[in-house]
Length: 287
Figure 1 (spheres, rainbow, N blue to C red):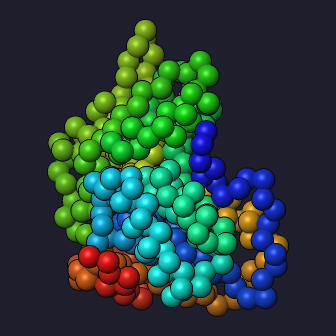
Figure 2 (cartoon, rainbow, N blue to C red):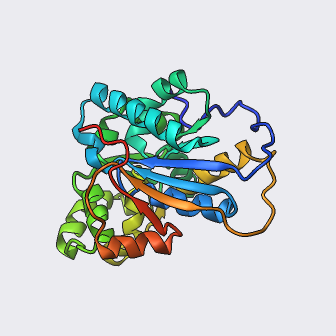
């Protein structure tokens, strides 16, 4: 399928570390917080740095060439600054486009994020599954390759929702979008055919799980919303399995933003609820 998003599934675990592993979680904005939450649940004693390239959000507005150049340049600065042991690209678009360049440039392991197509296909009973993506991810060859590889006899509807990532950002920043606009974005997910209904929706953007609670309230019928984050956390845990993390004081968790924008108080609270009490803006500005 082209890009090995899961960071070398054939690779063995990293050599044992003599200290707490340091994990850098990277996204264009706040969507990667859904992956961070799963990582913290799985590996609570690791040290985490959450880095958001919000100065360039949304990545879907960039050409592929510009996106790759930007991600590699920002990552050079972040790795030099933070010295992580492992990097999680908690963004479907960046994973699909930039991982080959990142792996060619750096010796560190990179774990990417894939649309949750395989678990959604496994979960369906009706045989009707939707992949809910950003428009860029919906156009991605990798997304189509995953559907071809895993759908089998299941009928998959691919929906490119143009505004959901921005709606998720607004939600955490204390300016939630109204129900009607949100319902319109997810309406194409619900398909009825020959007495059957869509019963599983694979989320192909890490921002979307931030809105799952509201999705449930606005859905015309119940579906399973399949989050890719648990698979990412399992892969990271496997790579770090040789480095035991005994219980003790929690390691640091910090949030970095590339823009100089001041975080509104609802966002500060949302970050603090995820253990990110130290926030720094204007990191690695490129524009």
